[in-house]
Length: 253
Ligand code: NDP
Image (cartoon, rainbow, N blue to C red; front, side, top):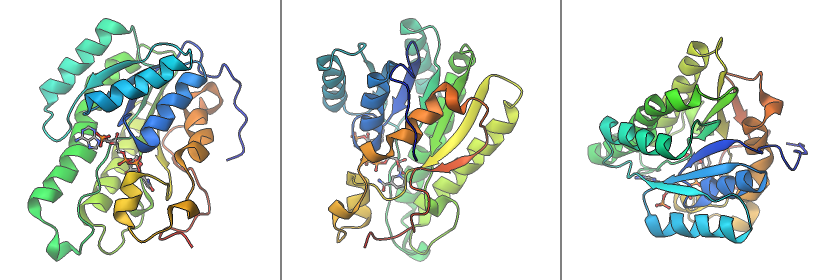
């Protein structure tokens, strides 16, 4: 995407990033902070989150708060408690980037282990929904809230062996569409980003033989991530965007 954001695009915006400890989420949190946002980092690993918060403060940017939530075990009540803790630190949320996900096993459907299947649904779908429900009141305090989910090409067109992950991303697309319609007359827009193959830990575990140097980095994707959180996307809702339009799914050649 060719997009030249203003340096103060996200000044005074308060943005929560899930899965902010690594990969695309970590990069998005750093990038939002560099464009003026006050970022809230969510993850399960205190040490990694603290390191991201430290990186943000080392750049002289607005202090980042971090919150712990392990999606593997989180309940709706945990998500409500988290929303309460967030509301004690900030008056509203102008943006939420749902980015945390797991891959599960890349095996045919008849080999998908029920416990791994359930964990993928718990992390990628259930907790993402419980958290959305808990955070909606804070998002509705914003004049122009942006709720962004993270999808995948296998969440639009099923592909052999992608089992639980693919089904969880179809559910993510569905969640986005339902919410977008429910809030279309309110000041909350709801969209998806499909990052496309990107150099991260998750990608390396899905394609262990792939040359990572052939992949875009999380930093390369940030124009779309910025655009969806800033005012330039204000009227867009219910859309699933590609961070790498035209990229063919599968191993990078
Ligand atoms: P990474 O595996 O690098 O990062 C995933 C993030 O989710 C980490 O912060 C991780 O935390 C967090 N997370 C995982 N499990 C839990 C849990 N139980 N509780 C809380 N947080 C958890 O993945 P990517 O950066 O590659 O992926 C980011 C998003 O982009 C995902 O939604 C993914 O599906 C999507 N995507 C990625 C593509 C790619 O090629 N990379 C392609 C298409 C979509 P921790 O650091 O503790 O492990």
